[in-house]
Length: 342
Ligand SMILES: C[S@@+](CC[C@H](N)C(=O)[O-])C[C@H]1O[C@@H](n2cnc3c(N)ncnc32)[C@H](O)[C@@H]1O
Image (tube, rainbow, N blue to C red; front, side, top):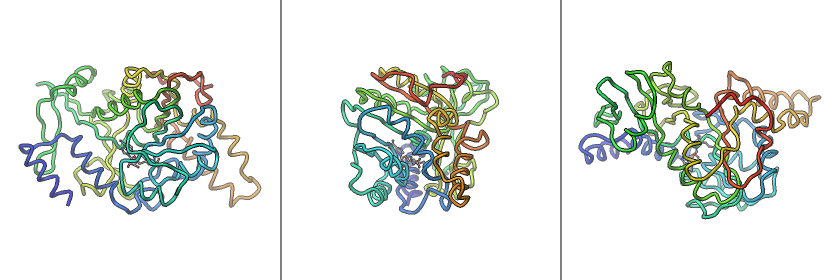
């Protein structure tokens, strides 16, 4: 089905579509399936899917900020379930996949309200955990002949064309060696600008894997950050089994911060996930667990290890907080070195 649709669209567009469009169509099919992408049996595992430790720790930060919670891309609904246990708040979900929305509704029932678009003048907290990495990215190549856009041909493989417009402008602003391939997240930046326009007061937390610009477009990363996940196997070929694997790119946090500032938001904090969770008091949450009972404690300790270890999610995952009308510092950024400049 997807293959037919892709081929028809590519033919209608004179034999070529942007990689961002390909990624968008593939994601519609991938997240439109009603089977299990998430968790130990699925294609990948996210922090809320490990267990409740992540959500319970995040809740300590959210207590500082008044108003409803709006979660983008709530996946299986695991984070919402934990946060609703910890906090008595109105809980809103903005989810682009109809199939996932159904799953979330079945799990969370009347405790959540689903939105079709961003509310005007929102006052409260917004959360996006592993959502921006799933947004379509444009693929770019820097060549001695100039900047090219790497798009998709009718044979479902890469085909380069000269870049133009906003993509060319964004690519020219980056300092990279030649030849070099990478991605530019124009859709993620547009999403951030739109979030900024709708957030009248409060904080948006973007939690994801990625880097600031200097590390993202590092000379030693000449093939970009595209990654595909199927059954816990990660590989770099986005044309393998289209629609049946998750395609992602790392997040350029500098670009998101800039887009948010353009929309009038202030950067309230940027830290590794490990630093953020430690500041929020993950060790206190752990201490609440029953240490005497190994059956109870061991899984929680394993979650902490996955969330905090530099070899797992601790360093690669970052937390970026942007806000308006909120007193800094927020709990999650109260201590720690700020060497990760944006
Ligand atoms: C990798 S999953 C993460 C799910 C969940 N947040 C978690 O941490 O387990 C990506 C989620 O983002 C959703 N999504 C992708 N683009 C979105 C957008 N522009 N707005 C809202 N949700 C989006 C997907 O449908 C999916 O629910």
